[in-house]
Length: 266
Image 1 (cartoon, one colour):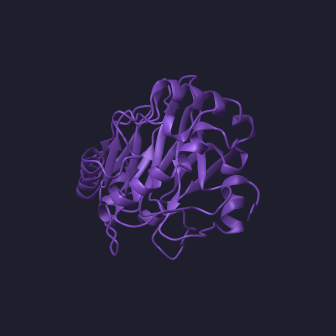
Image 2 (cartoon, helix red, strand yellow):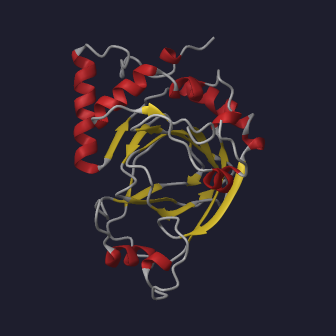
C-alpha cells in the first residue's frame, strides 16, 4: 500500500521533518517567492513513477467527470447591462473542461493521499503565514481538471486568495498557464489594463514554467490568468488541492450544481 510520505520527492522536500534547517530554509524560500511575485513553484515535487500512477488513476475515472462549458467574465459574475458594452466586466471568456470531483476519487488514490497528508498542510500553512484547513466540500476539496483537444480556461480571477495545483500530465501542445501578475489589488481593479488584455494585448503576459510533478502556489485572486487551448491527443491533467483559512467551508448547492452537475452537501 502506498503511503503518503512516499508520494513526494522527500530528498528535495523533507516536509515531515519540520525541525530541520532544510525544512525551515525551504519554507522561508517559498514564502519569500510567494510574497514577492505571487508565485511559488516546488519543482519536481512528485516524481515520474508516482505521476504515472496518478495518470492511470485519472484515466480510470475521467469517464465519470463532469463536462463544464461556460461563457463568463473574469469574475464569473452575471452580465451587468447597466455598464457600457465595451466595459471589461462585460467582455466574455470561453471555458471548456472536464472536472473529476473529490467524492469520485478512491481514498487510496495517490492524489487523495497527498491532499490529506498532514505534513503538507503544516508546510503550506508556514509558507502562507496562517493555518490551513481542508475544505469541507465533498466535491470541491480536491479536483482534477481535465482538458482535451480544443479545451481551455479563459482569462479569470480566482475567488480564493491562493490556489494550489499539481500538474499531473501536460498535453502535446498548448495548455500553457499564463498570467498577468498583480493586475488588481484587494481594493482596486485596473480596468484599463484588463480591457487591453481582453482585447488581445500580450503586454505583461507571463507564461509560468510549470512541468509535470511541479506543485504551484499561485495568488489567483490578484493575478489574471488563463490556460491556453489544448492541441494534440494527450489530455492535460491538473490536480487542485483546496485548503481554506477556516474550517467547515462548503460551496453552495448552486455552485456545486454549476461546476459538477449535481449537489452533495456531505
